[in-house]
Length: 78
Image 1 (cartoon, rainbow, N blue to C red):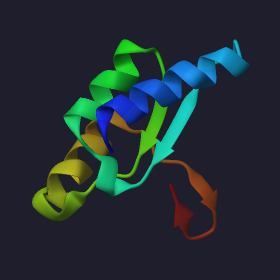
Image 2: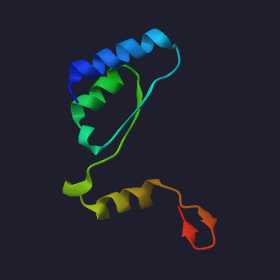
Image 3: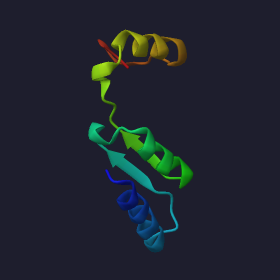
């Protein structure tokens, strides 16, 4: 996504609400530049990660270290 468009969209969204903004984007927008725009403008965000270049085992280790497993129902642990 082009940064000027993203910045302008946030600016326009602020003209119609005083509430907190939430952006949801797919993995094609998983870039440091986009994250910085959201953080600088205090916009919450959900962006799907592109894990092709990342090791799933590393993410599993982080989840085990920092997460908390819950038994949702018989046979389903989250």
